[in-house]
Image (cartoon, rainbow, N blue to C red; front, side, top):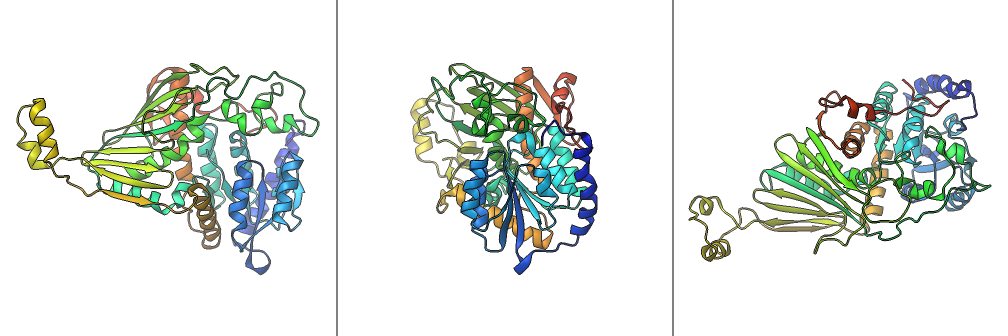
Length: 454
């Protein structure tokens, strides 16, 4: 992964891949009919995804790759079968006894590693958000289709039964026409947030240059590595893509649309005293076909509004509201009927209360609760779906096109924020129609010698 290696080293895997891609179009599984997995990055989210795969007896982790040795030591002990340990993901992709790879690296690595894996004839489970920019995501979709790979994007709500049920209920008109949807990420980090450490010399056991990969070369700062990379735009889209992609994917699902018509955003670093680049307060608004206004609210420097829960999505319809939480959903009818609306007399506060108290809802209230830890349970179901699709060669619950579209909606929200613009979006051609300046943000230049494959 080092940028000190030559372009010949980077193209070597493509040559190997062309042959192996043809080989794996007829899928050959490992001993005992197990699906042999290689893990790229096993810290933080990678460790959680590893736990999910280890619950499935027909999956075998034969190799792991990470730049940080303590992460690999911990993972190898958990796996317990002495997996091969590597620090260069390309060597892992060259292994002929691997059927699929699981990519849990920071966002800025997803495109290169996924495309190289497709070229190497491997199926791929890749964590969300799918990409760092829209162009990367489209090229990842193209690579998956060209090489006939099964891809699962790690938006695990797609494999949660209650999320599917809620989305289908909304899409079928269960709460009427949807006029507004609101989603929230709330975590008060005031006043110091992630802190403000100085730049320093990289640790002796951490290869900073390789970690940066295609991202710009900058001095090592501990806030830019491991989980806190999400607060910096070189490696992530911030909390809008980190959490927002889960919400936007469910919203796409429930509305039956895969792209908005327009987007705008406002916010800033308003109160927190740290070295983050992303805003601590942000509001993004999208307009979707059919007349639905969608809002994502990120509150990281204030207390939450009364009664509001983190991770909640509110679908507001003409007949009522559906509240989707992390472990279930609730339908709350509005106390209106069509006849009462037509017969309503001129408003005065005396008859307003009596009119509402006597009204009967057009839909029934409903409350559905999930079971257990939603995140862990859904990830286990999501990984199960991936393994099943490797065998059947069917598309996964969160196929790469779905993951790309949901990620793109969040990415263009960041572009609206950065350009301080109201942007009209052509979802078919994946371009802004009213801003050449904004279109420049749809891609970015990799640091040499890294190059996004065409």
